[in-house]
Image (cartoon, rainbow, N blue to C red):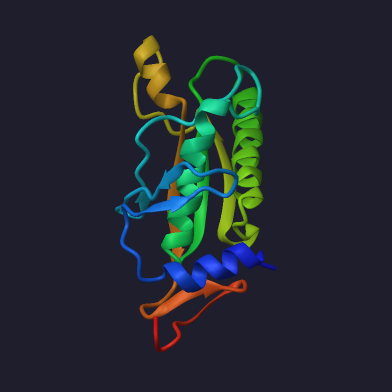
Length: 172
């Protein structure tokens, strides 16, 4: 069941453009809404974790707050996959397990910001989908990443609310 904060934001933010700044839940500092391009939320930097752990580093909290603000603004996004990738160091089984744990941690963080879990899916890819050469430190750094991919959008004129895509109210 969505929180009253989520329901309020859903009602108020449907027509706000991307790039708007929203107030943060626990403070007065603004949280930026991130661009969505080619069904991906474009991150200005990496989401980072404690080495060998699923603990999200505090430096990544503002960025994750921006991801939450983006989803609260883009209510046509019905489902978002949180894909976590590793480099090839360590065993394949370990990398798969740690990436899933990290994806679950990101999902929990976003759910803690009031986003319904029904809109989120955590996927740990491990080392299965490299985007760079794992033989170099630079390549390994590029392969260690978190991606936010829109997997389902509501039909035109609908928004995600109360666990389903529903028609927008006439005044929205």
